Length: 150
Image 1: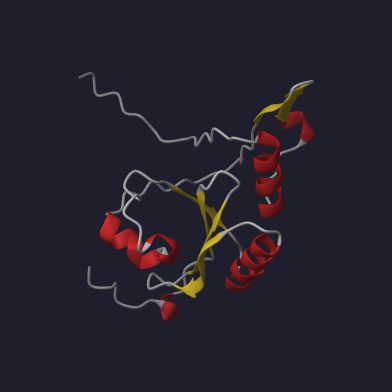
Image 2: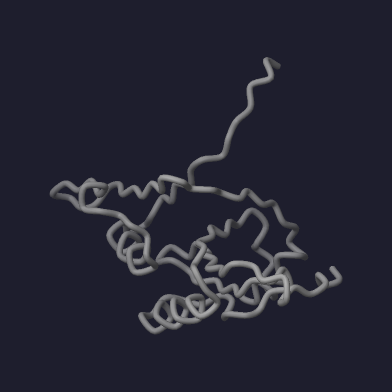
C-alpha cells in the first residue's frame, strides 16, 4: 500500500423521482440553484449542492444502537446497511419547525424531535425514496445524558 488515504467528501442519492427529491431537499433548505440542476426534455437527471466550508462527519453505528436513536427502525429487521444522511440546523426550535413542515407536507417521519443523550435536538424524516434524513441542532453540554445501555 502506498499510504494514500481516501477522504469522504460526497453523498450521491440515486432517486426514483429526481424532481420529487429535488423538491424535498429544497424544502429542507438545501441550496440547489437552477444552474445546479441538469434537466432535459425527459426530466431532471442530476442536481448538486456544494457547501463552501462543508464539514462532514462519517459515522458507523450498530443496529442495536441505531434502534436507540431512530424510533422508526426499532421493530424492523432490515436496517443493516441502511444510511442516515444528516443536516445541521441553527437551533433546537428549528428541528421542530422543519420536522413539522416536512411531515405536514406529507413526508414520513421516522423519529419525532427529541432531546438526544448527546445533547442535541434530533429528528429523522424520510425523503421521497425512503432515505432517512436526520436533522440536528447544535449540541448543548447542559442537555447531555449518559448513553443508553445497549
